[in-house]
Length: 77
Image (cartoon, rainbow, N blue to C red; front, side, top):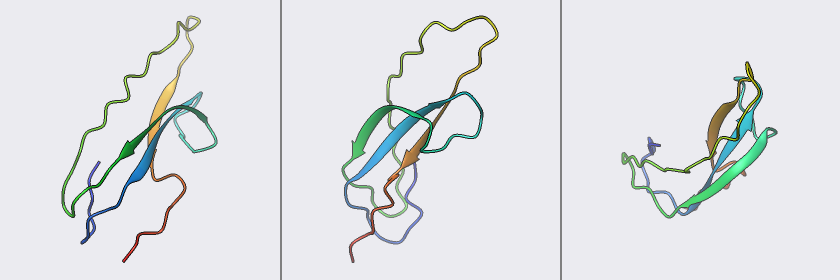
């Protein structure tokens, strides 16, 4: 993830979701959550959730996606 803003972030949440379609939303099944403590302006970070995919029936597709700060927390000045 990359902070494209001009200021460092505070701490924020990043959530991983599982979906039955490629349109990942916060209404899908949340499978993991994590915290990024801070991210400087222009910096990037990789976050590894380590998700275990359960055994699926043949032909079943599962999609995963992430949302940073899904609560849309306001930034402090």
